[in-house]
Image (cartoon, rainbow, N blue to C red; front, side, top):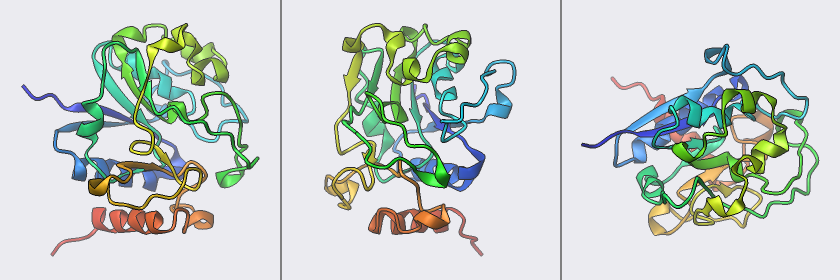
Length: 235
């Protein structure tokens, strides 16, 4: 029996277009059925009760860590930021899950040079920066992420995965293939079918914002083409 891959996308009202284009790009490239769920705070009343921190750049900075709870601490699930675009088959990523680990991610060594990113948000720097922007959760091994913990733990405790207790429980995903950081890592516009990035990430600001319409060059053009294809009206 083929079960849909659970994919959770961080939702922010300022990036609604990004959420919808990402979801469509995932579906269009996937060889397996997907269950795509945007994580919207208004749908988590009584579960997510955390006050917004001035350093948060998005509404989903902390709610992402509720994915194991939303899965009933069973099975695997994918979380990704909304400021991404799928260029390849997410089933390829799904096939990399490894039960030796509680969580898997791309282990970037990202030390930001800038102090401000999109919409004037503060750019923070910390160990494991951007690791949590794409996560494969092995939910039964993430029981420390109760709603109570997610609502009260510090941002660093959450994003540096201190709740795991041991970094050996974090598995590494292929660098460059998944969660390619646009304008941070060396540019790579090769098609995914030719070894290029299968999932790209506009962490500094994406083309759905007026000030970043050309961010990533040819990849920005791909985003607009994906948007136009998703919302094309057919006769």
